[in-house]
Length: 535
Ligand code: HEM
Image (cartoon, rainbow, N blue to C red; front, side, top):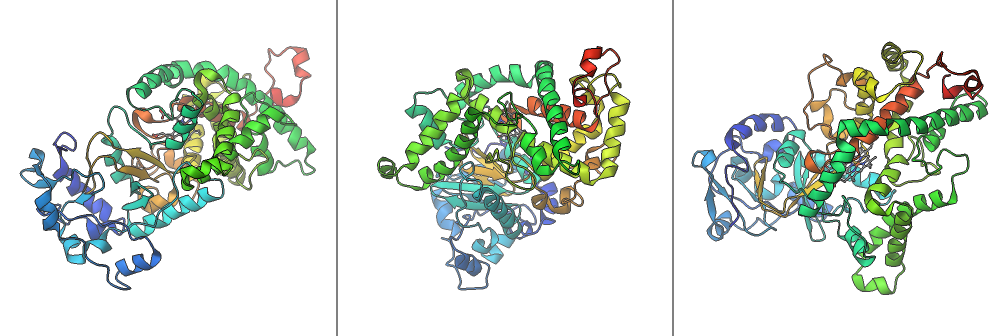
């Protein structure tokens, strides 16, 4: 029997008391969160209407939507569980994973439940959207957040999603994740690995096996003392980047480097992206990533029998094969992820590299774009670098903790342009309580809290503006810790975080403060192109 033990959500009434006023300030939620956070009877959460027409009706502007089955019917069938932490108040638990049971609310009962928690018609699935659909999908999420408030329900195929658009609610969701969090079922990716008899990696592996894999990876990638060991290799790439930037600038008639140019050359993983002519193999790798995402759409929506007659499934498998053929076979997923993250799209247009999602280079492109538009921030950063890094050497990993503005620029860039704008967790181990609702296990919780529109002004004043100083100590009130989590949260958070941050910090530091030739620099080295040591 599913339980709603106090352990899962120990101080619910106190938490709700502080949660309700905060959430009410966010719009629609006030209409479905109980004013007194109390009540006895449970009501079924309405299933999201599937069309715009149906939604209008649900909002009270059209034909009345039939009321949901009376709550009492539900109550009779479901076991009632007493939560001792709630001073005798009762939560209703459902044994069916497809039912979502909100606790009673006077407003809910008064308004009719359908109007109180709506959901958009089925959005496309995370991770399978090709380039063109991705912004539309994120836009759809943002719009839904506006319409439905900080928590709403959606359905896609057999997936039932709870969408979270508030850091307060998100914190509740993520703090309940267990020892082996699951992001989503990744069925399509797993099918490729199974078909080709390949091992699962950190993205696709689950449960105990994932945990053991992560323990190994964490030691090598997340331990700060280990991550700094990559600084030399990264420094080498950054030196090439400086040379390439210099070349590009000298070729431009105005001497100014366009943002597109910057992102085209911004970063590489020793796979030749900084070369004038990208190697054919690298280009094939990049194209395959695109193809994999594009074909996965067809593979998702088309029936299985069509795989034998239509080309999409084979193309999907082939593109994965090319991606993996490029990598180190010991940890294929990690390798391709790293290479993939380091390629990117530009602020103004898709680069010739044409990768499907913005990654490390994209973050740097946007950071440089904003720095180029704001001389004040540029100057502050420059002064900080000058004060911390001696004139005769390049910035190193040891300098980064002493440069709050440098870190703030990257944080702010990731806040405004999150690399992973939405994320998800499937709670398959236990029921969870979010806001005022009890969700039976197997419901997937999506969150889209990385974007300024979602956050509105509640957590970041002037959310649309690029203001790195908001991350500095003593500037304004501290923001909610879950209001921007670009690398995810908890034990399943990004394993490449330290390396990605190191890359971005070192590159930004070098571009922002080119270091003069070290005095110890031998004469022959001074003859090398200036960007190797300076402007
Ligand atoms: C700007 C750079 C990057 C950002 C913003 C980013 C962001 C993320 C996010 C949000 C997740 C999901 C975390 C969660 O579910 O809580 C993730 C997962 C992951 N990232 Fe990154 N990432 C970046 C760079 C990298 C790099 C460079 C690597 C490889 C070295 C990498 C490897 C991974 C892997 C393997 C996972 C899956 C972890 C797991 O499921 O256990 N990431 N990343």
